[in-house]
Figure (spheres, rainbow, N blue to C red):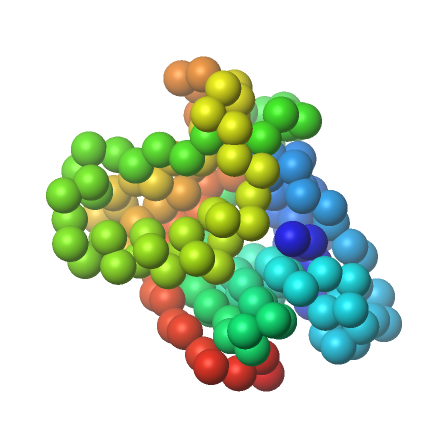
Length: 169
């Protein structure tokens, strides 16, 4: 899986992309003049950060092999806004679900979608110091928060809505 942005991302979107690159330990490809078709030739699983009013506003996960995409409207907080420093991960990531969400049937549907499109393509390591934790959020469907041990390190991604498409574009 690779990570990229819209063609001319704002500074905040680039910062968010770098935060995800560091915490998820996946390569960030600067888009520049590359078309989506050229990006799809680099990797068959692409995580694209889209913008809304110069802020990260969408996460789109492309599954080129199956010609599907998952689009989520998001709200974010950057690493520097949460812990004030850059945290690097070279060890894979653990995925945990909060107690409030474990028994929630509606959340289970969202989890299965994210697992198919995103989580299965990450370097999962149950012994990792870095944890991707899915948490309940009162205003949103759910939130994704990153921890190192018990300390929040960010970024925080709040998922507002999810849509599945049977086409790449």
